[in-house]
Image 1 (cartoon, helix red, strand yellow):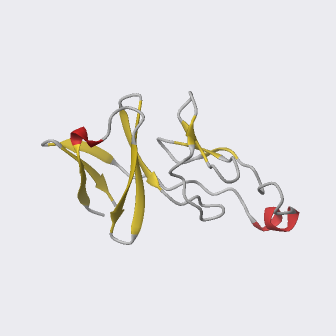
Image 2 (cartoon, rainbow, N blue to C red; image 1 turned 60 degrees about the horizontal axis):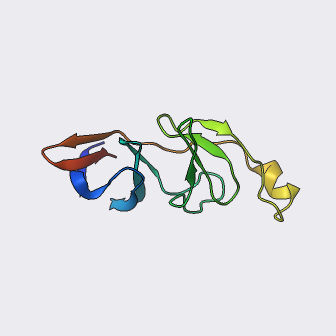
Length: 116
């Protein structure tokens, strides 16, 4: 794992989010109430983008596709929705809860860095 400079420190105001490419990964970097987080931009369930996921007051990101919730700090599943409406139970039976990958993040010398 290595640190990669991804954005200028002032690029993310509270409430902002950006997807950055680090190697072969798309990392969602977001500023929630002044705290920076870096998570995989792909839901571990349906492999769809997390960028538009709602942030809950308790610090979870909600998958905009199937409404599972993941802790922004640890990536742990806080609520798992086995399948999105209309897809059916078969997909739900083969899909087990998986954490959302999270990445260490720091601010140094006016830049935001992510370790991948």
